[in-house]
Image 1 (cartoon, rainbow, N blue to C red):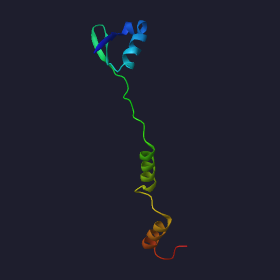
Image 2 (cartoon, rainbow, N blue to C red):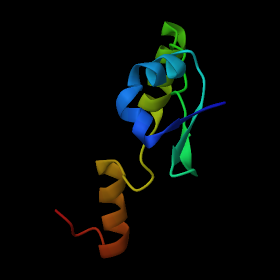
Image 3 (cartoon, rainbow, N blue to C red):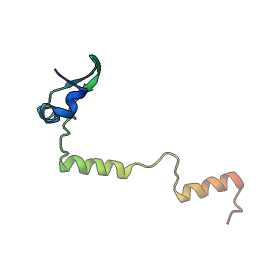
Image 4 (tube, rainbow, N blue to C red):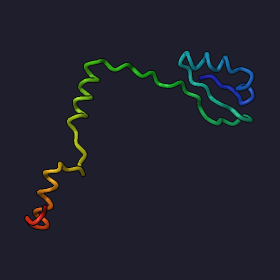
Amino acid sequence: MKYITTTDLRTKSSELVAQLKSGQEVILLHRSEVLGTIVPPLVKKPISVEDGLKTIQFLAGQHSAGLRSEADYYQHLQEKYGKGLS
């Protein structure tokens, strides 16, 4: 793991970019104190068409737990307040 100081961030930014593109982690130093680690982002693998369709079909079948259909809600109101609802 390589290191870079806060001063080097201004002067050696191209080297930092090259190291991150190659997948290396870089330790950030400020006055001989470790501030943190600069880590390249995780590479996300693309989703296949089949997986995307399965996800869409799964989500389309899901209903929110708190929502009811209009008929269920009307039946609930009839049970609670009686059949005199219009």
